[in-house]
Image 1 (cartoon, rainbow, N blue to C red):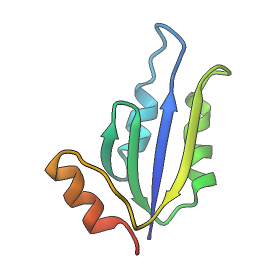
Image 2 (cartoon, rainbow, N blue to C red):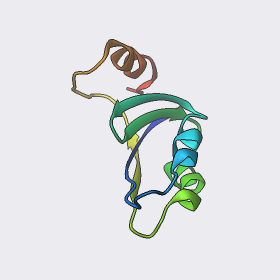
Image 3 (cartoon, one colour):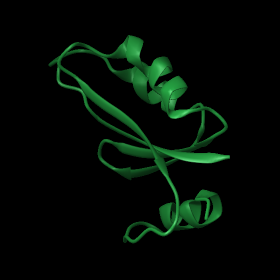
Image 4 (spheres, rainbow, N blue to C red):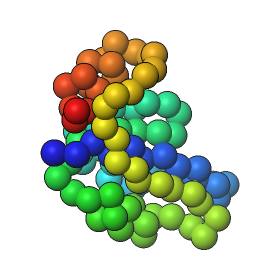
Length: 89
């Protein structure tokens, strides 16, 4: 199973981007920062991007990137625990 980072800037004022978060939260996930999530999945980065792309506008940014150990960081205990559980070595 892979861990993918999804990071985005959704820029259209007034647009409802709820479907982006709803789609991200169909996976096992941890919120790393305001607009950055890690998900655990058997899907490829491309297939996750393809699921999210219909909800984006031309001026939005969204990247899906593979993550693995080692990593360094500080954050909430539940996020740290999630990373320890799911990040591959």
